[in-house]
Length: 611
Image (cartoon, rainbow, N blue to C red; front, side, top):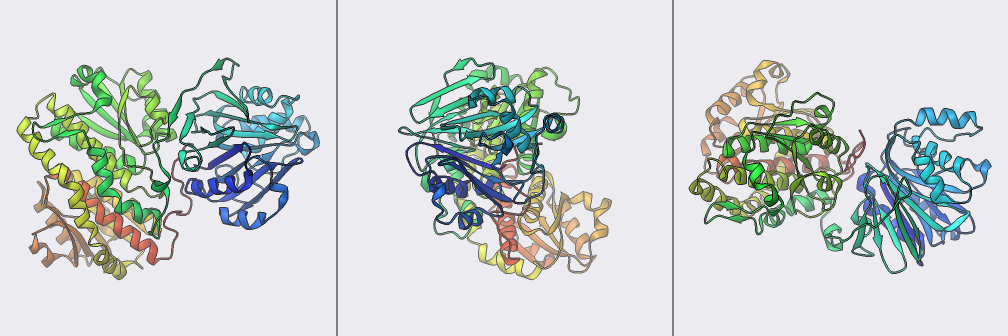
């Protein structure tokens, strides 16, 4: 949520900062801004996309300095506007020339603002970030690092910040608590960013800042310390992202690219982890806790949005394959509820970025209550991975599209592996596991067959795309798939859609069905297949048009549905890996036909790092 990029070194900062903003724009695109120190503080910002900022800058040589920072915003406090765009300055009357970019929320900004106004400060925006800029300026006495440290001691909330000061034109100060921030280390230069996509074009060596950590950067020095000014030595790591992975290539949108990357993404997730011959799963991240996990008595999956839907599927898998009671919960509700954590409870946090604020906070709460914590995360070195007892990396590669696709399939695949791993330590026989894992190894190829139906799916979408209300129905392990299909349609096409268990339709939502209403039903061959057929008849009798996702070879279903997308026949526990793909493609085509920006849907950001 929001993108930060900052630079100090020997290169012209402007182009590097703008390039970084473009790579980070999926994190927020309400407004954008840049500040460069070049004979004083030079600042430009505007509502709108990064390209608007780029046009506004033109060839203005005031921005030709070699130290600066930039930001692309997803609004929290204050509407998207020029004055609320970052960077923000301290009070101009003080003459310090301090500028700051900030991700996160300063929860006590109102009290701090009152204090500062009582001390003569005049504010120019509605943002909590400007309060922090003024607070740093209030404490400034010639040492930027010291004033940042003093200001942050007064702050309650989450932040990732980068700060420059015209009076110290060779110093960049950055800090974090609760929001991601990393420092790319080059040759006599540093590139600071919210994530690796803005760094990888310049260096593959990076430092992930820990919470409550400040770094002072110059071209020839680097110092990290705690808020208490205790020097610490951070760990350098090699970025696992390469430039080719984050380039759009020949695709019109990142979402479509990532939908088509799913077969290879699942292959990477499975590589070296599955031995179908003896029905075993190897998860190196769990080895240290194998004995303890073997005594698991309950599993709770936590997530938000798409990650929660993956967790719902995971709960079915753990109960079905490992025979362990399991459930999925909104992380945002779990963290504020007095959740009961019994002995033997394992809590699994699911997050693509590993930085989702609610999921991170819920994980901490579970850990405080004595649960063993695991992470199912895609981004190596992220906060959730560092604070979990153990975990499983998705290994699906970077995901740029705001609407998650390949990360969802990675989360479900990792859940299959986790459930099988737990099951083999309990009641799952080698023969059962071996048969299922053999099929799992073929899933990437089977997904490719589903992707071949894209044109057919587009034709069907064209018939219904002007309808503003859709239903998505499923049963059992495919009920969360229906939820995910509805979410995808809402996220990028702005069509109102509801996903629910097919049986729940009769308990109220059936009143919504009118003549021609599109109702998408996951109707694959499964333990509840006959029940699903009955639900389809209920929809048809009220004039709804059924779009079914069905099993290949089930030709009879054409007789009761207006349209059918077929997926290969696999065991029920693996069906979500296939049944969700036509729904992803459906949502994509609907958004394109409605003329929306698929990769940057309104009001959404890729990683929600604030409450």
